[in-house]
Length: 242
Image 1: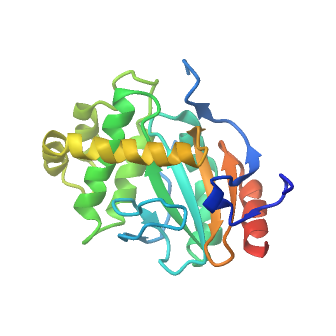
Image 2: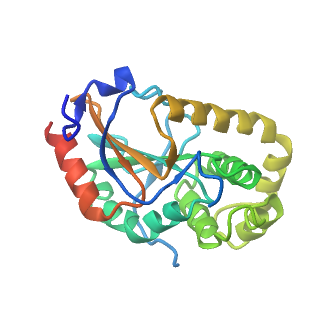
Image 3: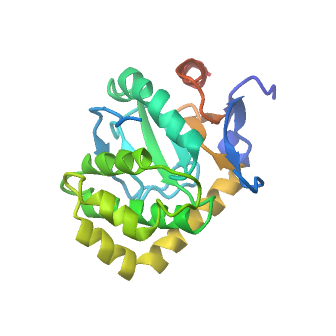
């Protein structure tokens, strides 16, 4: 199989082809501005995807019937994730998500330590809180946290600060988040750890990493780092037409 071609049934062998790489933070590294307007809807599901990713508890942006999927592994402390969301994600939403061509599965990880884990757990708390009645409120919270991003493990993503940011987010109850962080932290940390283990089995070793997946054609390709929109355009076209 040529490395410049999408892989058919690659997800079964855990060998999704890499279509591009850019700025990213990796597990092996020891160191190391505005709200994102969008009108795409969010939904939830209890399915397990053909990539063997448990979709329960994960925010999914876009139509449940979208023919293509983008799996997005992120860390709230990752500066390249913030760059992607600021520079590239709005174009993906307007060009592919809103027209119903792509849905995006958000999978927060904890690559950078305790504060990353706290943010990932808080993300799960917020999604559980809003997904039935007001799922788009999750996006308000998600972008508010990225807008507060500071230096890695400097405390900006500690529980008290996340709760404080939440007080200004419409549709999200800060007190409910605080209770969730106190009562369900161990349970939700286990879920984040399981997500991380599955990511590693798919050779996701840094954030942001993306897998563009066509369930009908069983083709998949990987993008790594804060890629520009034209790299996603190319990847989506290749996976769609493979």
